Image 1 (cartoon, rainbow, N blue to C red):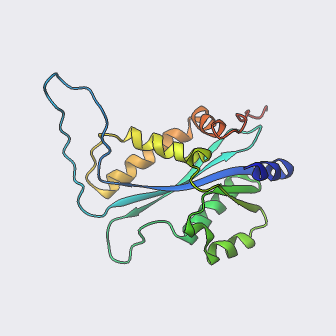
Image 2 (image 1 turned 90 degrees about the horizontal axis):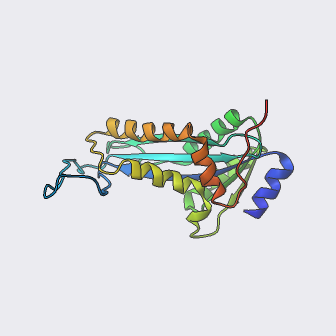
Length: 202
């Protein structure tokens, strides 16, 4: 983390924390209100292998508003359909973030095997605007994107969805709302030890 901060400060780069997660049709359970003696029942389907995968970036740069950038991928259980993000998908996400942020990127993510494959390393070598740092093992508290996933999943507790399309729409809806809550993303970033970003003055 310290090295990533120094490099970002010296080059005026964005620090982008990255992570992936998945959501299935199985509803997350949570406490709720109900009439005394009447246990609430929510009927859902947990059958099949439907899954919505999400890859996200929490982007930080002093003097600028924080950003949340993400992409989703829907797996419906069909033959030949990718079950999750692969190298080309992650590279496209980083290219889109570079275009949107209009600056160099210092990428910070975990040590997942997908993040260290030859295609990923080769793609990184072709992008001079990108520097990559790996988080320590078993350190989710250092990645603000983990808190984004936690908030998203809590907001879907007891939320019954039955199809891949409605599940994808629910996931996107919650992430889109978080994109406009810069104070929320600021808090997640500050929890990693970064100073809260200050919006640039006009």
